Image (cartoon, rainbow, N blue to C red; front, top):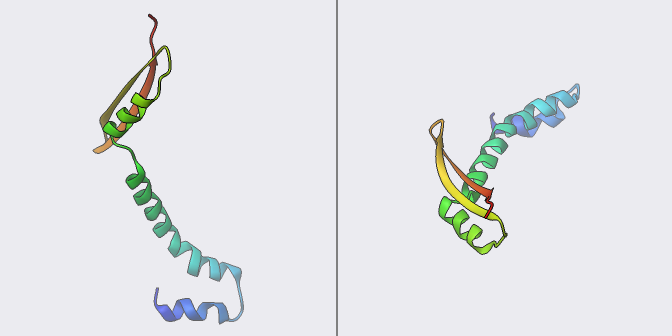
Length: 86
């Protein structure tokens, strides 16, 4: 969207809230969704990180398993707390 459209839309007559919604909010949504996905990806733990976290937790009766699976081409990191009976 050209810069002048962004600047002049609030002063267009007749004033409509739908025009503001379609001019400002709708184009921003894909950017917000992309940003959320990027930040979530950067915050994700690796299997080694999860293994180190699990080593610090001592819960009687549980064994911890971590790993990485391929899910539709993207790696999926997991941690499982598996109860074991002695």
